[in-house]
Each structure stands twice: as C-alpha cells, then as structure tokens.
Image (tube, rainbow, N blue to C red):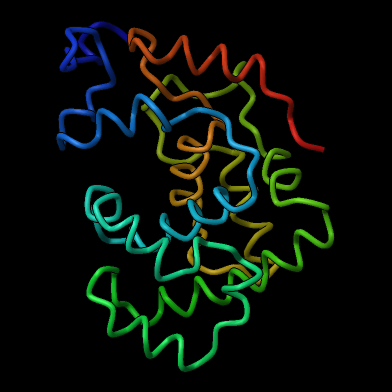
Amino acid sequence: MTQADTLTGSDGRPRCRWCAAAPEFEAYHDREWGFPVADDTRLFEKICLEGFQSGLSWRTILAKRENFRRAFEGFDFHRVARFGDAHVARLLQDEGIVRHRGKIEAAIHNARCAVRLQAERGSLAAYFWQFEADPATAAPPQTATTSPESVALSKDLKKRGWKFVGPTTLYAFMQAMGLVNDHASGCVIAGQVAQARKAFRVPT
C-alpha cells in the first residue's frame, strides 16, 4: 500500500482511509481494530455483531454496540445460550438494537454452539486462532474480502451448526480481532498492531 491508501487523521498522522467514513471510526481504528484478542467473550461478541451487520453498515452496529451489550448480557455466551422465546420477544421490542428475528435467533443459537465449542477446545480463542492468517501468503492490506483461512473457518463453523458465518463476515471478524493485520502499511497504527501481535501469546 502507498500513501494514497491512507488519510490524515485528527492528529495529523496517517491512518487507513476507511476511518474517514464516520467520526467515531478513528477511535475504534486506533484502539481496537486489528489488535489481537484472546478473550472468549470479546470473540463471541464480535462474531455476533458481524452477523447483525450483514446487509447494514458497521457504523450502525458500532453506534448500537453498548445497547447490544446490555441486551445480550454482555455477550456472556453461557447466559445467552439459556435465552428462550420470552427473551426473543423482548429483544424484538428493543429499539436500541437491530430487531431482526433471524439474526437474534442466530445469536442465541450460536451461543449454544459456543458453549459446546469451548467445552471441546478449552476456549474459543484456542479454536479461532488456529485460523490465523499466514503473513507470508496474505493479500496486501485491505485488498481482499475473504481469505483461504476465512473460507476454512466458515466451512468448519457451519459444520458445527453456526449461523451467519460466511467467509466475508469471518474475514471482517479476523481483521478486527487481529488474526490478520490489515492496516495499511503507511498507517500510524500498523506498527503498534505488529508489536502487539509480536508480544501476543497465541492461545492453545
């Protein structure tokens, strides 16, 4: 990537161009996007939010994220797995989130899948980090919407019964959770993410 792939942020430093799409994106980009995550709750939350984003913009979901966290018990998937019809009815009336029955039911269903996966693998993190992108074969930053790893992850999760986990959705998940460093090479945060990744201990 070149300088043309970045823009000047509020502090005068270069950042990935997508930050310009909304004022709140810069803080999300600087503090979260691409930094490696090993926390099971955060990983599950991101899978859910990517599913809710399907057909919508990330700005819509980011603006509602705190409402989603409240509605879904902080994305504690052990709690969400116990949601029943009354919870679905409540969520369908919650104006603070995306009121899409299929996506709400998928999040609850995926929570049950997550409980089983955690029991099998010890942690969601140990499972997801198997699919970390190989830097040697990864596409140049922000030039792909899927990868061999996201395709493989999608296929495996679907076999396990997960919903709303297509390869594009999962590539966005991998970008955000640090399984691939997709910051533009000239972005001021790219080096910070690379350092964080170097210090990161891959869950096993």
